[in-house]
Length: 473
Ligand code: NAD
Image (tube, rainbow, N blue to C red; front, side, top):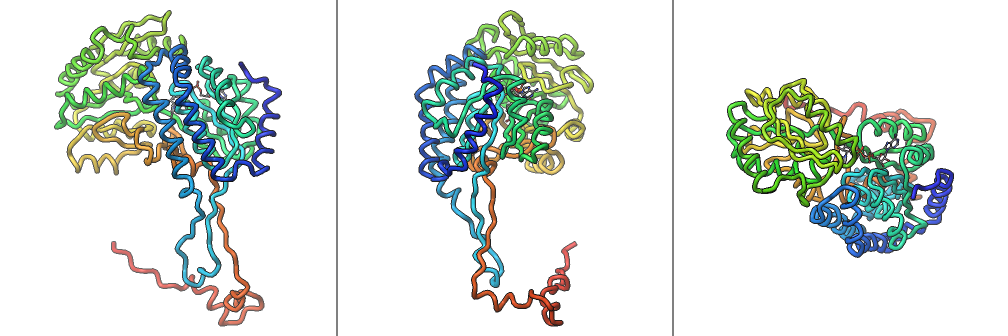
């Protein structure tokens, strides 16, 4: 049920009051809430799978492995690692500063807002919430209105496991989200598209609220001409078919050496037939398109392409089904290169050299991830130093999401801030610096007090005259 707009400020106020009461501070309490979250994902898995099947036609195995598995694993690990993360840190300092006890305390930011999208609604709602709980924040979670069964289910199950005085679900669309964004928060964590991100960023700016933006974009794949095309095809296809291509890190388009394009097409067709012997129109292992709007958007992009369709996908608008469609000889300016595809369409762009591929990528916004298939160390190093993207993945697709210890983040148009485990904890944590000056330090501090003697001026300005080491260039 949509949350009444006029109750939203009261919800925020109540969460702020809980935060101020200090109830979220003790680590055992945070650990308990994290285990409860993991229990919720485990115990309610059938209801969650059913809801996502209803909303997205999402295959059950995908939900269990990608959404629930990750949430359970990260909640449990965050609970276990929390005592280490939350420990105050003592940085290495100059000997004379050691008695001051320089300390970095890990302070929870406060009451935070998490706005999540429809495509991986379980993972993208709870992954940030795990960090917020671990950090000791109170939080509102606003799931996407495009997955109504799932969002409604959260309203029912979350209060059974998590303390509703600390963590609340607010359901709704633009009016409710706009109301949330009018209010002051201590951090906003938004996952979604760049257009709405600009609305969120403007709202956050009004209150100087720190912000994480997890966005998308066109993640390219570069295939080195010497690489095993068959293996690349299999791994690209596997990544592209998840959630029918509706994943922020889906391989968006492929740049391949012109003389190996047809070999790539053949390999993609071969693996597609092996993965889906009856196609993907009715396959229970292939998701549906989220809405009629997105279905129309995708079929319209396809109708305007000047590329050559080599794997035609059938479309069933009424059921929002769209089969994987592969298009070769796609050139700069084509409809399929206009925007993030976010669907089961794979354009192949032939290039004449690696330089051309790099220039193609660099001429566009920084993607969330750059995929490259190559065994050549030098080439990999070139890509690391000559391109920019949130992440760079060699010789596979999507699998980077399984490594909880790596920060997941965008850059430029693909967003900013980071998440996964410790990085999500850090997002919701303020590093609070402290010193504690001992009474006995007075003798050493004497020089700072006015009036300054010549000797004192020399001492307190010494850094300005310190010799700077010669550089090696
Ligand atoms: P969406 O339509 O569900 O929107 C995301 C959230 O924004 C929802 O909660 C929605 O209610 C809210 N919203 C929508 N319009 C709004 C408005 N006018 N004002 C305030 N809030 C509003 O999801 P989406 O944006 O279609 O998600 C897909 C996009 O998200 C893709 O670009 C994808 O690449 C990106 N994405 C990024 C990540 C990541 O981790 N980097 C993960 C998943 C998706």
